[in-house]
Image 1 (cartoon, rainbow over the protein chains, first blue to last red):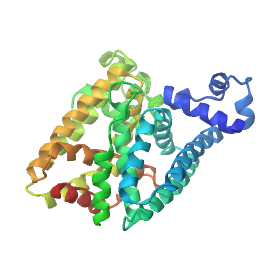
Image 2 (cartoon, one colour):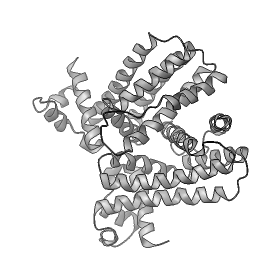
Image 3 (cartoon, chains in turn blue, brown):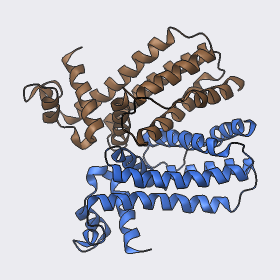
Image 4 (tube, rainbow over the protein chains, first blue to last red):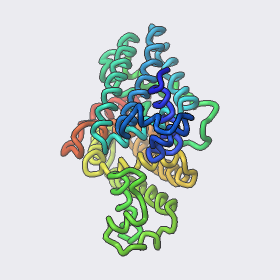
Length: 186
Length: 186
């Protein structure tokens, strides 16, 4: 892992814990136990830091989807795998999800961040499209958008439920199965 | 409209424009053209102001759903009405949606706000359940949760798309129709 990736990962944790206002170069230096000025050295502006964090989030998810892609053959497998992945996002990956929504809102006010975020989303949507296509879902691109929207909403709702950092995520398999079953009939 | 409601509406606009960091008592006074100290008089703490804003958002949506409820008889009507409402949220109601997501994220860090927000969500979910039930959807409560999650995800995605404050919202009718058609078969 490069120093830049390390810094972006620390930024993800800071944003999750404190919101966008918690993200400063100095706070990242402290949380990463780096000499003061290190984060500024790698990312001169706040915008550079924020955009790198958005890209890092997309990289993490892309790596997970790539792993998933290698093992799928049909829709049932995909439902299980997708529910398992979303379950991880709600437990050990909770910080990443919180940071992702925070950056999405910040992006509505910052065009450069929006570009970085939309590029990441387009890349992930392409991967989800390939997954659906490989699992026999017709109109895979349209359903990829729907599945992403649905999961985004479910995750946001789950993040709000009492009991921070639950040991077990809710079982989303029936929900994802229903949506993808509708897709399979489409 | 009471002074408290007026203040909450100004808070919604401020949060949408600048994120949670833009919300201070003094900023609300200025934006509402009120004498300094007015917002503090009505809402002593930031927490009181933030919770009142969350309740105001739920009140707005509840009023819209109540209006919708009075005119529905079947699933086709519901699809049209729901798509129309979401279309409003993405154009003239954009600030409310942005503020809603901002408050949702803030709520993951503030238990009192979380309680206010979850109470509002439960109330709106009950209304959506009644709407689906009245339109002949079986398992209306489960589908209400799904529909809300799906719309939450679609709205978040649309807020990110280029072209701030688009004059026209994307046509969500086919998407909502597909989800509710699956529900109708459930």
